[in-house]
Image 1: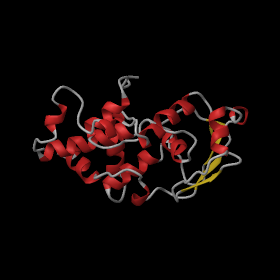
Image 2: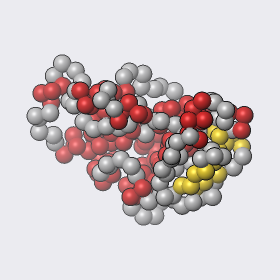
Image 3: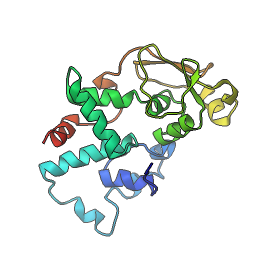
Length: 208
């Protein structure tokens, strides 16, 4: 499957906001947005002064969410189409579906420093759902599902560090630091999203 292979920091600079793609680096002075808070490229700084059209705003919002969650266009479009068929507000439904991806849940439980790292943990078979190994990052968790680190992988340094840290999880999840086990206790609500997203712009873009 095609994947973006260039610098993650360029994506943050292109969207003009931190997408937290590099974990702790994004919170340090090494963050590219701290040093060069303008779009990449020769004329990046000059683009900050240009007026953005309504279509441009819609496109940038879609690209920002795609990049934050590490999704391809086809995947992102499929979430929108599924959300449109559901009852309720399309934009909120779409964000709820994306939030319930297994790779995102692993990140939100604090088992990985970024969504890219959590995707790798899932791909490598380190994560179990209800006791069974799942290596599909797009797997949709449900209320009541138990997410855990595979028992023979808990000795890895990355997981030892989690046990020694204080993890703050959103209210739709529960997490036992000592057992490295999380549980989905509710569906994610709109105010549980940890990114500043104007989802109505994405809905307007796709509904044209």
